Length: 132
Image (cartoon, rainbow, N blue to C red; front, side, top):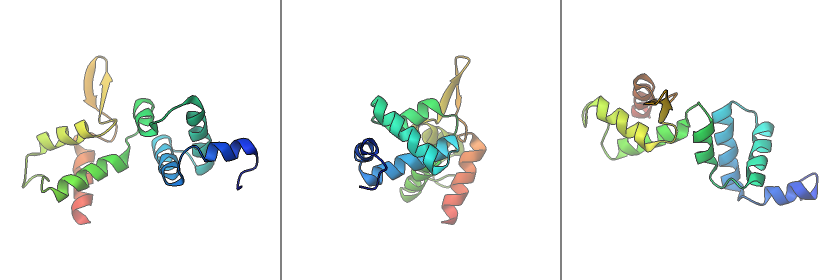
C-alpha cells in the first residue's frame, strides 16, 4: 500500500491508474493546479460521485481542454480536412468548437466561442499540428 492511510488507499483504487493520471492532468490544465491539489480535487470529485471528470471540467472551467482541441485537429488532419486547402476556415472553426467540450459558452443568452476556441487560437493550433 502506497498510501498514508486506509481511506487514501481505497480512494486511489476507485479509478484505474492510467485514467487517474489523465484526470489529474486534465484538472491541472483546466485550473492551473499543481499535482497534489489536482489529486485532492479528483478525490473530492470521486467522493461526490462524479464519473466523467472531463465533462465536469467543461462545465466548471473557463480554460479550454487543449488536449481535446488539439487531438480533434490532429484527427481532422489525418482525415485530410484541414483548411485552407480542404475546406474554408469558418466551417472548420465551427467543427472544432462543436466537437470539443468548452468549445462554446453562453454569455448573456448568446452562444460565443469558449476561451481558447476563438478563431486565432484554433488557427494557431492548426499551424502547430501542421508542423508535427
